[in-house]
Length: 286
Ligand code: NDP
View 1 (cartoon, protein in one colour):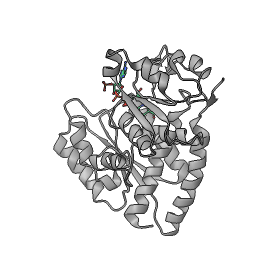
View 2: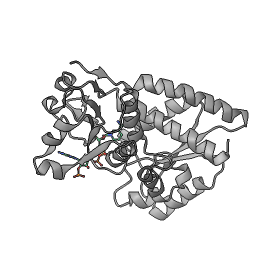
View 3: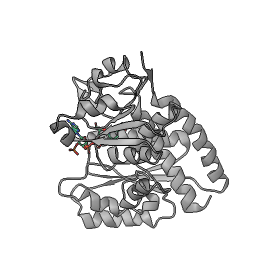
């Protein structure tokens, strides 16, 4: 078996078309969605990510504003800046770029964002919404992985899924999105690895999502025949980007595999834009 590659770009293209229609509808009512990216200090990875966001926003007709703040500001000052955006009716989405300078409490600063404008889905309110299966702004990376799974057209109910990684913005929300579709989900982490049980669980997975940041953690030989494999990892090894799955060998066993780069990544920014449009519509009532 040679897996079908689940590329993010064609799916993103399809979603962009839907978003363009919604943005045109908002424009008919004099509304342009506006996303503000807040950066405290400087960071190379987040500079690249912001450039991608700006390019995608421009292509769709979403206003993208950058708010660049000094690295030595206090949490109180940052919270005040965020509050200003919360109450600005021209602003529909707020993304707080990470990492924050050392010593700043990321969770507290994320909680300062109005959940209705939290287009990155990082507030407790939105994480709770994924958990409860209620409408909300879900984390964009989790949505991207989920959309790739949906794109296979394989019925999900009753499938065995294994998610490796239990972060609040990737592993846990992906697990909840799947469980809300009545997929049977096993979550794995370093505890699973210490217990020597990763291979056992991966072997059983009809849907495998790997989000650990550990290059080639999953050898291809572990992958179940015919599995859907979503590799979320982005790792820089010898000047190349590789995922968390040994892709070449996994391709021989899986039915579908998302490549790194080119799988989850290109779709994540699109999910952020979709959340921005969703936030704009619910804030404005259009
Ligand atoms: P975190 O570091 O927050 O979480 C990593 C998770 O992986 C933890 O739950 C950790 O377990 C688990 N883990 C780490 N090592 C192992 C191991 N050896 N065996 C089993 N589990 C392990 O990472 P994120 O969730 O933020 O990101 C995960 C990956 O996804 C990264 O490579 C990141 O770059 C990438 N990413 C990609 C995006 C995209 O758009 N494509 C966007 C966001 C992230 P434990 O909890 O026990 O420590």
